[in-house]
Image (cartoon, rainbow, N blue to C red; front, side, top):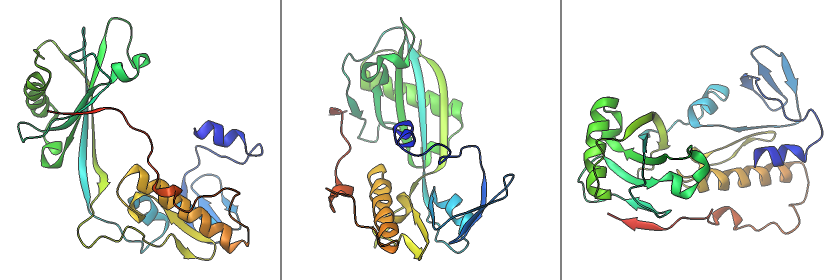
Length: 234
């Protein structure tokens, strides 16, 4: 998707590998490429990075998430389903046989099982967490996990912005005329929230520039779903 969006822009519009160090309404200062002038700046990053570029911006608390990828020689479930591992019987919140969803993610003869851990358990050491996850997945899938290989463990302590009540799901995206910010920290703490805040920020930019919304723009489109896979409970 990013490549398709970039392809529709004039050559040289998109610059990668450039680290921004500060932002204002008229310029972005970079670490190694000098200052880039502009008519407006939209900071579309996570909360911590946004606050570094925009001092004083609110940074919420966060919920950590760990994602574990195991490989096996046969699928424990031959169905492209997301299994909700509820009931407090282990650290896994949900799991799926990712290779059943997208076979291209694994080489022939192997399968990929991806599981997500939320909350305090996400901060456990990888080896300890792996043992607990395997025990739970053996019960969830009804098969031995002893022969599974742990491919990777990805831990993000800042994965999901916390939303304690009362939560404002529509934090301002327009800081000044010419300076905007978007991300899940300005809306609901979901991919949908990040997209919705981006749409609000884009509308704010267009409004400040005196440009009309795009033809066919749906004011509720930011709340639309983004597709789904079958869900099963365990």
